[in-house]
Image 1 (cartoon, rainbow, N blue to C red):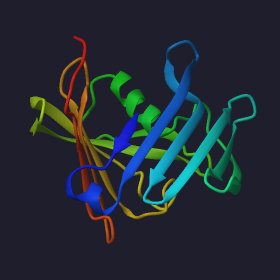
Image 2: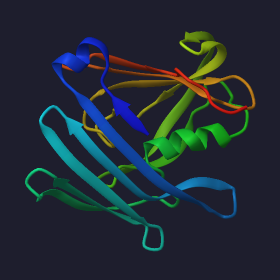
Image 3: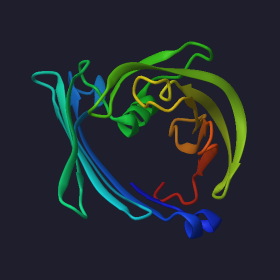
Image 4: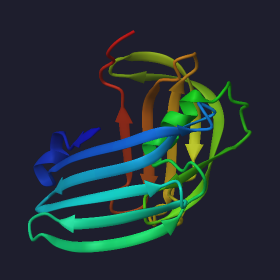
Length: 195
């Protein structure tokens, strides 16, 4: 996945991040998207960092290491216990796509770890909505993911994800709402490739 700042934000603060993750399955295909590794290279403003996580499912532990690529200095290192078949955040979203038809108002728990923290994250399918994004208008189900709760990510806030209300369960919009200085960030599907 690649994240780049755009518009006015790009002229004030340039963001160019590359995120890679690898997964396998536990128990055949019953638990897909168990994380095996993650790498984030972030170029944000003058900062250039790389974070790597190795997920060891045999010992149910994750090892996190972050380097400053400009100075070649190790900034952070951590090891955390994991629930079985933990996913990173993107793997958790992908896992949601493979679950059956959601029951509105009935939360789902997904094991999530960023390599420094881990928790069972509650995700609640809340409401059916029609959403218009650059690639088109979709009938969706809005989910709220309890990620910005001080456990996985220290920043307090709310996260909503809109998946198409069909067999594809395509994520068409993600919205993060936090306090100052970030405010609200909305990610929208701009391009769809394949069937």
